[in-house]
Amino acid sequence: MRKSCFLSVVVPMYNEEEVIEVTYRRLKAVLDKLGETYEIVFVNDGSRDKTSDIVRSFCEADRNVKLVEFARNFGHQIAVTAGMDHSSGRTVVLIDADLQDPPELIADMVAKWREGYDVVYGKRIERKGESWFKKTTAAMFYRLLRSMTSVNIPVDTGDFRLMDRKVCDALTSMRERSRFIRGMVSWVGFKQTSVDYVRDERFAGETKYPLRKMIRLSLDAMTSFSTKPLKIAGILGFILSAVGFVYLFVVLYQRLFTDTTTQGWTSMIAISLLFHGITLSLLGVLGEYIGRIYEEAKGRPLYLVSEAVNFSEEKEASREPVVQGIL
Image (tube, rainbow, N blue to C red; front, side):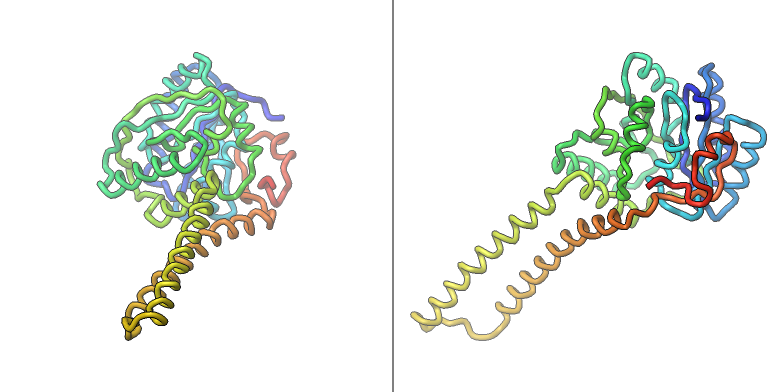
């Protein structure tokens, strides 16, 4: 086994050449000031710019810097998982490379950990540089998710957090593909607390979570931690069936006992479109869950590592030479 350190910092990266040097300098300044042993585990999630080359130069100059190179892009949550898989610290910090979450807050998180907390997560009291639409939809999502699950997932939080080794080990033992890390951390429990902070604007570059990816992450969160959409679909289907059954009696009564039978097809087409639209929506909900069952059933590794830099030979020998993900 590779020798452990006090603190591992996991930094997932995707096309971060404009900011990664500043990120490294700020992280190193904070970690050096702590006076504890540490490692910075950068995970390159298939970047197409010079991100990997820049981090390799860090690895050559600083043995505390590690690089996990993916064979292709596997996604942010998978990159975070790979960083945790390769970390060895008694405590593990998750932080993005864009500097919206301040590295300087790590010292406060460590202080909370020393008080006996197993998880210390950053809670955003203000979000700078984000549109009204993104702030509003994010607030709505967190509160909707909390109302739909039995897991108490804190609102206004991201993946930025410090975890004790036992929490990290619990997470790495959970290998589902549709991953929502902040929800998984809440699910495992342990003693948790928060530190408040103001989330800064992105230092440089473009966001790696456009609307399409945010919707995908939201669906992963909903389907991973709640079956209520399925229950709602069932209830809605029952209500619509009851309404349709009542309407059938109304139509039959008008046809057999009155002369007010509705002529034309406008109302019938409108009702047909409504019912078919709802039916397709319900099938879409079922499809989301079935699709995730299909992905899990294939049993593929979460990720493939093409290279791991600055890890000990013992650590590398413990992994398969080609497929370095974990089933």
